[in-house]
Length: 262
Image (cartoon, rainbow, N blue to C red):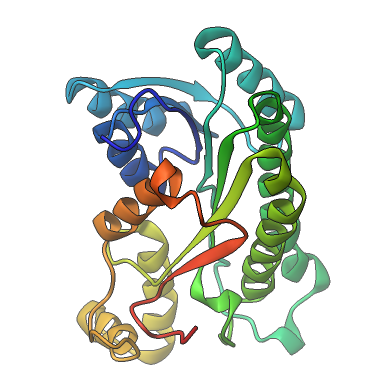
């Protein structure tokens, strides 16, 4: 197994992406410390992991709260002795209306930028401080295709994703000499996630598309003419978190099924 006895902290573990990665990590032998802003969905994921024979503990942690993140990480160190993997899959709700940028107020535009960058910076910085002592560790981020392509009517969402990718590269440049890798995942919209269904609800109202038509529209931009799955994304996450990807840092793995050319 690729992650035997690795100690992994997952933020946003109650969501679709965080939950899928948690189950995949556990299946490869990792010891999980799962967190989320709301405890119930995180506990549900932890229960699934334990029922399948894995190791998982759940905690309520707001990734925007520096003190809460620091306190939780210290409890992980006290329990497990180290942190090997920090995986951040936090998300914020999509805007309820599709407002053009020229009509959007600055607070609404800035919200995702401030929220995502704060959460990713805090969790990465505080994890890195623990990893430096062992001169090893992997910090992982998750973004989306609007980081690299112009997407209308998503406000500050695209700039926020681009900022997280820039942070990923900057962290790697500073931390790689100390044995810490920083890598990111950039998946295409995955039909199993709540986020893509939120997007569909907003676009459907404006365009009259059905759910099937919406998925076909997104899939038509890919080389495979289909969308990626949570399982595919989680399998790549396992590889990136493992020692088998020791040559990868400061990079974002393109999981857009070819809709973005690298």
